[in-house]
Length: 398
Image 1: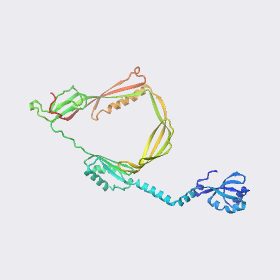
Image 2: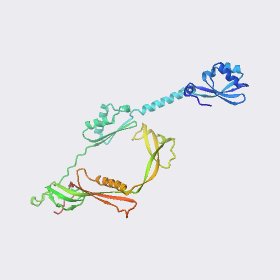
Image 3: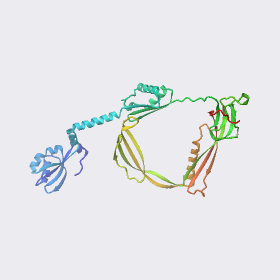
Image 4: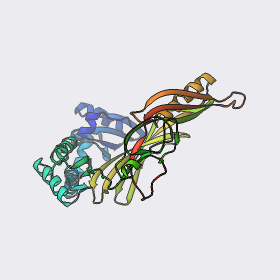
């Protein structure tokens, strides 16, 4: 049978089997009575299938009597019949609608508000801030502005160093970190080296220096001792000094001359996972790709306690990849290795340090024909003196 149009499907139509000595007369009589027929298909002598609307079927009585044929419905198609079947099961439909409404409503409001990282007094203050902003249980999710909550809590509780607000499903989580006052060490304080270095400059403000400019020190070595010196009876003091040192840091990278490039072809396959607590229902296709990468999108419909999800929908999208081998010239490989090595070295340099020299080593083609190795050393001038509480009563030798 030829497919009907959308309008015919919405109104509903029937496919009927007509039997009689002269089914052709049935078609002619239907035209005379202005009953529309479509998709007339002969099944054999004295038998045919036709399609007509619901109203047309109701008008076939005179046509059948005049043509001497009989008709039986083979199939009922269309939205009208679907609605009629649903109406006969109205309580089932009503229950499904109510279930979906409750599920949608429950996933649209906050069920749980958690505060992590705060003691009891701060927790109560944070909850009071949320209450003042109109954020509480059963608040609609679209009314929750995480950035505004973070700003207001930071403004209201000055004792907090960091505030993070996350809305996940029906759970709002506020994570905080209190400010930690720096500990002031009791007793004498020495100055130690923060890195392996060569001392370039040393200005003593208080204490007794046990190293000099040009000396090599290792990380953690005491450079200035917290004592007043022999003239003051070696009494303990808090050592203070400006110590600058030359520090070297290295970064290395290796780039092969033949690399594997993976490019997305544009073909994708989606699979959906409906997770109810620990049960899973998987729908869709996984895609039979030889090579692919995937990404996952998760939407929590109903959240549980302990940052868990009772009901969530997960979409797993797989992207097909085309794999090909790319041949690089030594110049291209060197450029890439140089950038990576420099980035690795500079990532170790403190922000206040001053770069004074760069040196580079590149692998020999005769020794390494399949790749390019680059090593870059960054030399900096930086402050290397850090206060350190005296660990024992003994003093380093002057």
